[in-house]
Length: 120
Image (cartoon, rainbow, N blue to C red; front, side, top):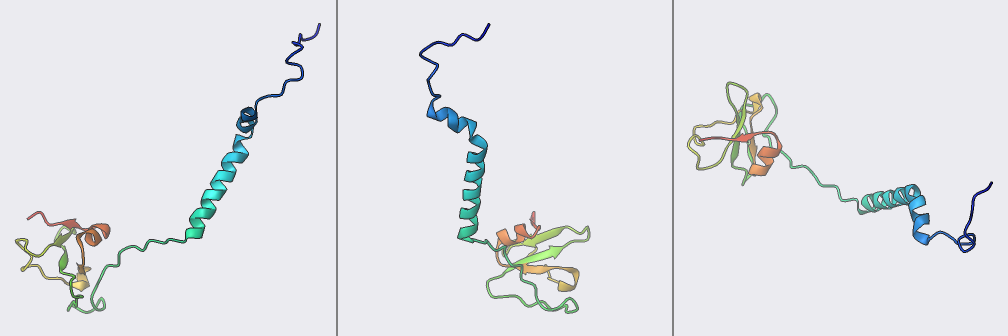
């Protein structure tokens, strides 16, 4: 006893889209390869912001670039806090590079370096 085959479906081919489903792994790999090559070909490397520090680690005098007015300060508990011009303790805050304190040019730069804004 064999399998009964309908005479019309004996010579029928499967639809073209079924062959795409059957070959989905090579298709996915080809698309990933194309995407990777397009990504590498553009060669857009975004630079991280540069943190401006002054002098060497032995220097207690910190020089800053023009326009970089945000003071990065480390408090007694080791918290990294930045102070914006116009804040309450901005004028009283001193930047000591020997302790790892530094100047920043933007809030985003300070945040990216891991510092938080002063609460007052």
